[in-house]
Amino acid sequence: MSNPINEYARSAILIDQLPFRRAGLLNILGPWAQEEGFRLRQSDGASLEGEAGEDVSLVLLSVGGDGLGNPHVAQVVSAARACFAGAPIALFSDSSEGLHIRAACESGVDAYIPTYLEPTTALKALSFVVAGGKFFPPESLFEAASSFVERGVQDGGMRLTQRQHDIIEGLQLGQSNKMIARRLNIAEATVKIHIRQIMRKLGVNNRTQIALAALARRDAPLAAEAGERAASDQVA
Image (cartoon, rainbow, N blue to C red):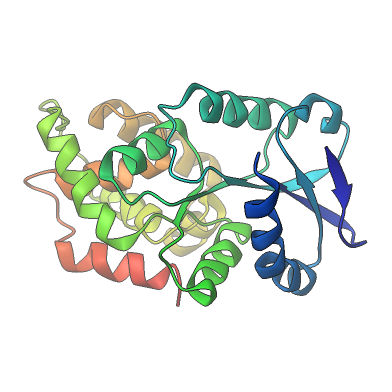
């Protein structure tokens, strides 16, 4: 089931299998979508393949208390990624458990927005994601980072260069490759090469995991204070 809410140039889709919960989110997200220039659509997630032709620029997935360990949620995320390639995916969840947040991080979603947040904070987080950033609950950053230590994520004896530390700092601040390249006065292609090398050294698979793994490293040059600052900057 799907229908447009307003008419704008770019499109966002809100997915929630429960009509009552979806209607509540629409009341909160509708005014924000208008301000951001989005045509907000809604779907129960049952037939996303039928939406594949739509030019969707943002996916908003509400999962209630479930996490990506729920096969239905994992299937919807996979379908959304296939149907709306390149569109950032933001998860709304009632759960603040580190296990769920870590799973979301590892899946490559762009934001995990717990429903205990004040609506104004959640909407600022969404605007940050639309601008190219990532958002995860600030208090979860250190819990998730600790989980990387427990799983033995270190640098495998290969030390990171100062340039790679500079790039990690940009990732922790949610900067895009272009923004990092401009700040460091290097080519964007060089930033991409460094990111691939960092992922190999840290044994991770995406940009968010790089930021978390850097916090977990015993010799990380970025102290916990920097991580807290990066998290607060996401919703500033």
